[in-house]
Image 1 (cartoon, rainbow, N blue to C red):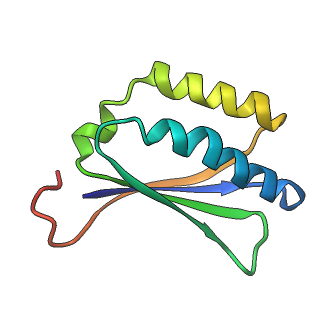
Image 2: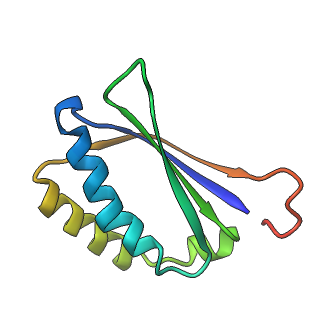
Amino acid sequence: MVIELLKCKVDPNLREQYLQLDAEVWTKALAECPGFLGKEVWLNPHEASEVILVIRWATKEQWKAISDEFLNRIEQLFLQQMGRTYKIVESAEYQVYGDRLSS
C-alpha cells in the first residue's frame, strides 16, 4: 500500500465548505478509481488553515495510472463549486512498512 499525502492551505473561514466539497467531489471521484483504498482528512488544531489529505492506494501503479484528464476534470468541478482556489503547499508519497504488495 502507498500513501499520497497532500497538505493544503485553506482560508479558515471556508474550511467547512472545503471539507464538504472535498468529500462530495474529490473523494467520490477517487472512490471510482482502481486501487483506491480510502482517504482521511487531518486538521491541525494549532493552524486552522492547514488541511492534510491522506489517501491510501493499493499500489503505486494504480495511483499513477489515473489520467491527467480525469484529475483536471475533477479539479475544475471542485473549483467551480468552491468558487475560489486553494493551495497545495506540500505533497509526498509513502510506502507502508511491511507491505510486500507495494511498489
